[in-house]
Amino acid sequence: MIQRISKQILKMPKLYLTTRMIAPFSQHNHNHSHDHNHNHNHDNNHSHSDFQPQQKAQPQYTQEQIQQKHKEIDNIIKSNQVVLFMKGTPAQPMCGYSNYAVQVLQFYKVQNYHSIDVLSDPLMREEIKKYSNWPTFPQLYVKQELVGGCDIMMEMHKEGTLKELFNKI
Image (cartoon, rainbow, N blue to C red):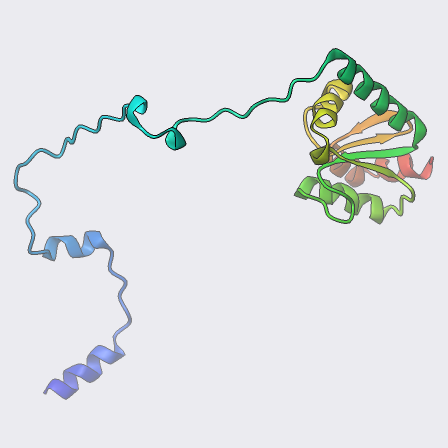
């Protein structure tokens, strides 16, 4: 008899029980009354400094450094037909959107474009956003005009206008 039941059990599909399914069969009765409202006093003044909220120190730049960076950005954009401000490098993009921009430029066989890794230069990263009035990366410039970011490039690719733009270079 036991062998026959064992064979039947082996043929049954496996059941995956959750703790809620098992809980009613538990021998421990959770219906007894005791205080579940534990008072957790999280006074940050008494915790170790390693666990205190930390603020990143923002680098302070002089007005002269900021003006110099704007001149550098302006010079880069005016000196190159195609400029890509991106996270990482074309050989090693550090975000998916920058990778997409590099892939688009490769797809259209854009040669000799100039790329700037904004992750390696915090001042460049902040000031190009102000210069372009565009808050995200990548930023593509063609013939000194901001084309836009990844979403704009994608839309222009679908419409065929990106091909036209690169054909004029």
